[in-house]
Structures are given as C-alpha cells and as structure tokens.
Amino acid sequence: MSDFSGLENSMDMWSYLSFEPWEACGGLMRGVSRRITLVKDGFLGEVAKYYALDYIVWTHNDAQSIEYLLSMREAVPDVVTQRFVLVGSSRPASGEREAKSFAFGLKGFLELYSYTPTDKTLPASEENPSKNYHRKISDLVPSINLAWNRRDHKRRLE
Image (cartoon, rainbow, N blue to C red; front, side):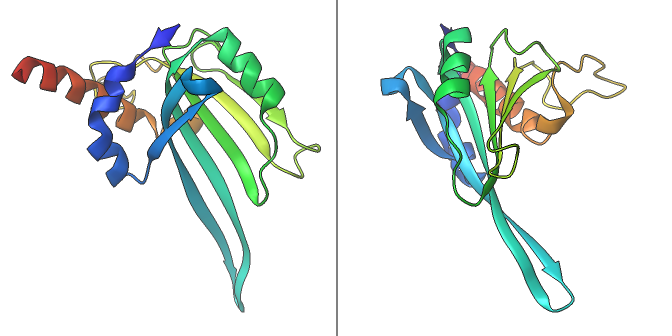
C-alpha cells in the first residue's frame, strides 16, 4: 500500500488550488480532487461548456486501486476527462499512462498516471533532466512537489 499521506498536510495549498478532499473504497484511496470548467467560445458567444476532473491520490493499494478504477469508474455527464495521478505507484510506469474510453470516447475518458515526488519543485528541464512523468500531468507535478517539500519543511520546523 502506497502512502504519501504527508501531502495531506498542505491542505491549505490544495484548497487555494481549488482541490477538495476526496476518498473512495471506504478510505483505502485518499487524496484531493477538483473540477475544471472548459468553455469553447465562438464569434456569437459560448459554443460548448464541458468539464475535466483531476484527482491526486496519495493513499492507495497500487495495482489493486488501478484495477478498481479501470473496472468500476463510470462516465460522468458533461465530463470529458477524469485524470488520476497515483502518487508513488509503480503502475503505470513512469512517463506512461493507462486510459479507458467510455462509449468510444463519446462519453469521456479515464486516464491513470503515476508520479513519485522529488525534492525539486520544478518540472524537468536542463537543470533537472530526470523527467519521470507523462507530459499530460505537467500542470499537476509542480503542485505535488511543492506539497511534498512543504511536508518536509513543516517536519523540520517541529
């Protein structure tokens, strides 16, 4: 069982980023989630409005949790993508993703990623070449690293 629950200590930061506490499987999977609104505008106004759901899961049972998500998770109305980042998971492999489409993608997608926090708060670059995550979660990685480093900082202050 992977447990990066130290990320929970930064709940003020997660709230600031519009994340809310989330759990499933009777508390065996815990983390935060947020709903993002995507609006497509045209010349005459709003053309379409849809949503994306982001989940950062720091307490989970690795492969068992992935099987649960792939088999039990269903399409959500008006939601195009449900992204799950399983922190500290060994599957899917670093830089890879597992995906499931609902009704051939017409009802949305479920995407699973793994990421293990580093001591560096910046994503991979020339200074930090160890990019161990998929490019589609590059918007979430700095937040996870920041929360992880804040956990270490808070522990040092105590």
